[in-house]
Length: 400
Image (cartoon, rainbow, N blue to C red; front, side, top):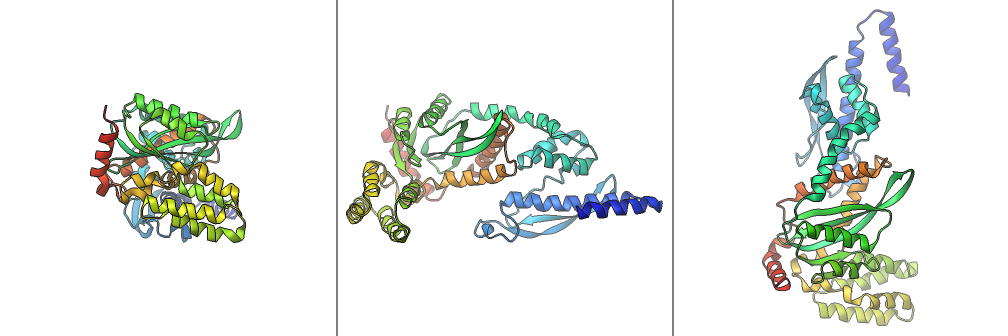
């Protein structure tokens, strides 16, 4: 508010004195662009400047470089922020490289970066001097609908060593605003490439929904999967087996431990966590089963509900030992898909809610496509070593 008052005072004084007011506008546009550039880099890195969330992320801020651009108000001195990996490309500067006839393309690029329609409207007005209402910008971003259709109809041509299934809840407006379950499937190919295979929005999470998604993928060419990993949603194992009866199933150990710790006293949590670590980090399956038996024997009287719950899912706890040692750490949890969900929700948080399902579809589709491009040709840790063994496994299992 104070900044606005100061700007208004400067403008009034300049008008009273008969001075050229273009310099005031020039300075404001320059300041706005520099502010937005910093905000863009923050959005790209997914953490605020100096935040501890940025530690060990693999990328960080790396100063800036100066650039002069030209606007209708004159020269603008811009400080373009850089990231250490040289992956950041500021979209705010796109309008100065292109004719205003391509303004719609710029709006779509800013939308992809996670900005809200109102934020985009403000930037467009500052850069071009044109006012675009949030409603107008929404109409422009509907051009992404064709991309959504292409994504959901593309052919699936690869075999997958593992497919992770999980949901995350997002606010969507259907008359009233409510949380709905965005179901996501992420696969890792035999050669180790990560890919978001599919996503679908449903009112609540359900095993039947995952089965429907897999049936759709089968129609588009998905034929062979070695392993499914999920958080252990009740009934999901059976539904996945209906879709892919030859695939194996693994329950996420992170969720197993998390659920167990909710059922024990605070003073026992540290010890129980360590005892469970001995189970799932064992070097071989027989050792893990032996350690599980010791755990159950130790806690069966004090926490019978905990030990009974482990016995109920015993068949789903150690499937990862059937796979090459180099990839086991990646397949006994759903961390890969949970990390993506966390990244997705950080961007969605800026939007607060989606006005409809189509709007959510556009945003998630862009995110999924960018994820797939980012990891195309990159083998996830341990998979390149295991490739030959995984190829042999899939050929043995899927002999027709």
